[in-house]
Image 1: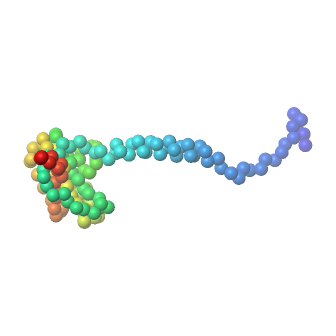
Image 2: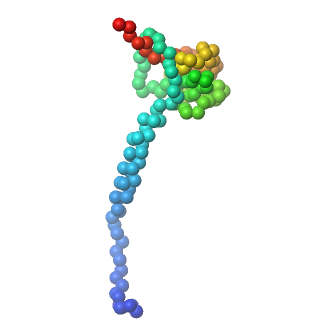
Image 3: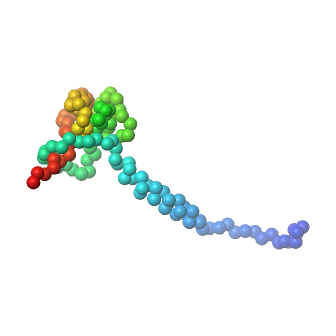
Length: 145
């Protein structure tokens, strides 16, 4: 059959294969993005920890820890949050974690320059949430010698 332009119409068969090259390109770009941003996500709050020669606590590596950080200005942060939390919010988070996973270890990581009162308030806040024991995070003391 010929149309008005003299060309023949052929019925096209549907393509049965998918071109995956664009998907691979997008996947590789996302992989590079995630690889470069992953180390930045685990940094959390900058806290200058006090140094102490305390015994290192042996724990199971697969148990998630709940860490309350107190920065130099006295603001409280839960785990690796970048925004400070109010004590009532932290108490609710700690209670929820404790109800969901009762064996979760709880720690307070206080900046060396923050008043001791702020660290104690963080510990009392965790105890008010029902946490049975709270640990303190420190930097190892430099070895003398």
